[in-house]
Amino acid sequence: MAVSEAAFASEPRMQVVEAERVGFHERAEKLNGRMAMLASSRCCHGNRPWW
Image (tube, rainbow, N blue to C red; front, side):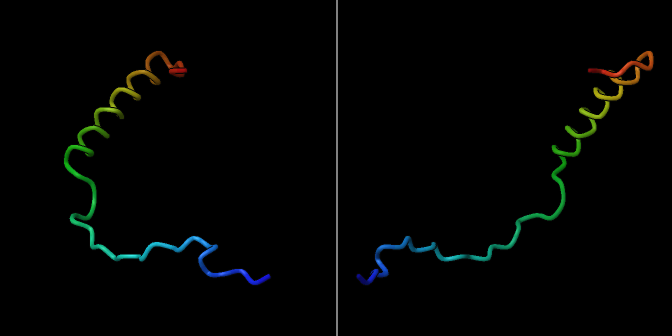
C-alpha cells in the first residue's frame, strides 16, 4: 500500500525577519536593576539566605 504525500503534515514556510531593536529595552534594564536591589537586600541582610 503506497502512502500519499497528503498523509503527512506540511511544514509552514519560514520567513527571516530582522529584529526591530538590538539589546535590552530601557524598561527591562530598570526592572532588572530593581529586582537585583530587592534580591540583594533580602539575601545579604544579617548574612542569612533569603530562602
